Amino acid sequence: MNKAIRILAVIAIVTFSIKSFSDNKADVDLWGNVGFVTALPWSPAFQYTNTFSFTEPEHIWINHEWLSEYILNRVYSVFGPSGLILLKILLGLALITLVNMSIKKDCRSGAVRFFFLILIISTIGYGFSFRPHLFTYLMLALFLYVLRHLNRNRLVLMSLPVLFLAWTNLHGAFFIGIVLMIIFIIAEAIKAFRTGTDQTGLPDLKAMVLLLAILVGTSFLNPYGPDLWRFIFESAVTPRPYLSEWAPFNPLAHFSDHTDFMVLTVISVAAVIFSKKRRDKTWLIILIVAFLGALLLRRNIPVFAIVSCFVIPQYLDGIAAQPLQKIVTQLPRFLAAGVLAIFIAFSSWYIVAAGKVDPLKIEVHGDRYPTEVINFVKENRIRGNLLVFFDWAEYCIWHIPGCKVFLDGRFTDAYDRHTVSDYIGFLYLEKNWENALSRYPVNMVLLHKGNPSYTMMSLRGGWKLVCEDPISGLFLETNVHRQAISALTGLTPVAKKSNPAAFFP
Image 1 (cartoon, rainbow, N blue to C red):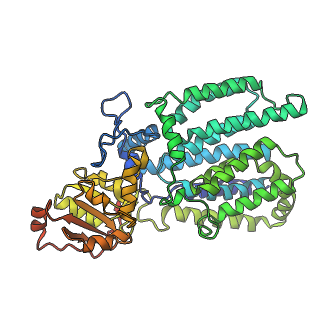
Image 2 (cartoon, one colour):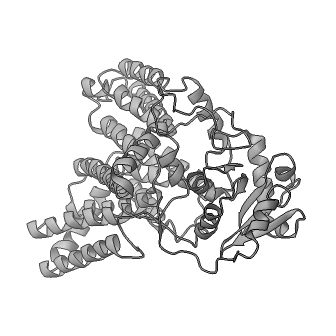
Image 3 (cartoon, rainbow, N blue to C red):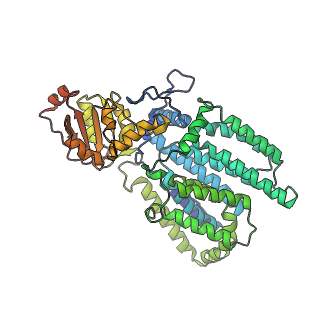
């Protein structure tokens, strides 16, 4: 590949990565991820109970991502919202650099590497919001890189516990590292048993088993000790059908959102089937497990994309390198350079302009959040026990600290399952939906107009709609808020327009 074309290709990869990782729309958990952890575990200010809720203020809170949230809080405190955007981009670039190093070892064709990386970046981009799981993506890639390329180096292998200690405290998905090690050891042991010789390239399978035991022991070094594992198991078996990212992948319903994932799947299957290269069963098993995880939960799609970077390129190179390289070399250089330049220009435009009011700020759009209603609550100093639509709970915790919420995005991390059940039942008018109002001291309700319960609250006696905007409405219990409702008489309670340019915080 011509040097100038190669340079343009690198710039294209970098700009497309920044474009994919620089989305500045506020995520529903952003306020919690930035505001929940403001101190370290040995500080009295570190919270071990659910202090933000009126339903279960003393409930034990297992915060499986406390270190990530502390890092986000510190970055925000020092650098503001722009620092959070930059951190997200840097984590993404570090991840792509790492997987590119692996792809380069297995794939000699620059053209194949370029197109495969573009597909990977696009697929991973689905999961790149302001959330702690970004650290899991990077940690997973580090683990895979060590096992794939550095497994003969005993010193490198023994450094994994240090990495795993950080992962354990950064995000609860650290258990993926344990699962990965178990699959790797079992598959390699079976391979050695069948051949009668150790062809694994590992220093010693017994040493790997010892390393696995050390990793498991390391996972108990967290603020919650063994209770963290209890939480992990309970969380794994708790269905969340009401959260779209926890839903199974549906190719018909999710085609537009995950076309890249479907293309990656087809390419991966074709590469494995048609390649003449000897199949590495260990890594194929790891890939299959990652793929099944993506089918079961959409949130695992980026995990599958990351794993594929360490498996597929070696097979893809053998079947696609020659024909693709032939096409690329036959293209006039000015045409290839022009296409890359247009691609770079498009990515750059998207970074700074496409649908963004200000690319250096985190945007909170009124068509998704009740910005005007919350301003109304703050201006009129309304306080109480607030039952709020799930997506807005952490937004309310941040902006109106005088109001405690019924339930927020931590779900069973900080709430009993009966509380969660009563809450979901109320929102969607399930049987006994009124339990949320009769069993708990709720005196404020802020609902999305799309919730079935919104109409019922409009008709319910003892409650008054005091403010609404195009997407939400605030109801106050008349007995508790009699004075506030009286004081609001004469005010304009309807916000006819949502603020399209509100910014975090």
